[in-house]
Every structure is written in structure tokens, then in C-alpha cells.
View (cartoon, rainbow, N blue to C red):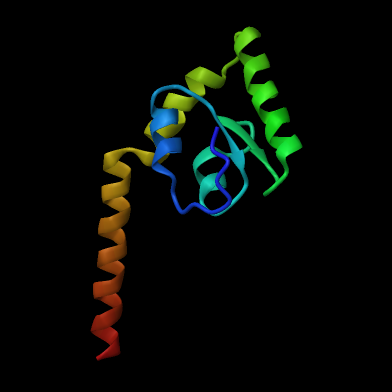
Length: 105
């Protein structure tokens, strides 16, 4: 459970998903980018404690149903947040900045 009202890219959510554990949290800051509603967890409206409770219950019900959720968590983390992908995105960003500054000066 990640009840933060403000987060950029929460490490605890990434670590949870990489461990195969779904995340329940508020749709605040960068949490939706990490979680994705009902793909690997549950997002409640910011400040909606009833929605957060519903998310916890939903995740728990998926466990008893033998849901895809646990398998998808690890796959989601590997696909979108692997070291290789992050390195590639940083490299591309740096290349874009260098290319842009060539034309500014």
C-alpha cells in the first residue's frame, strides 16, 4: 500500500512490482506511471480513503482467485523499469540535449 499524496517515481512501488507484489495507492504524481490502474495494482482518487480500501480488497480478492496480477507485476517492472531501459532513455535524453545545443549556439 502506497498512501502517498505526492510522489515522483516511488522506489517502494518499483521494488514491490519487481518482487511480484501489486501496489495499491493514490493516483498522485508519478504513481500512475509506475502502477497503471488494474494492470499491476489499483489506483484510488487522491485522498479517497474508501477507494484505497476498495483497492486493497480488490488486490486481496485477486490473490484468492489465482489472478494474473502477481505474474504481471514482475513482467511490468522488467518491461518498463529495467536498468537497460532506463539507461537507454537517459542516453537518448542526453543525445537530444547535445543535438539541440548544436543548433542553439
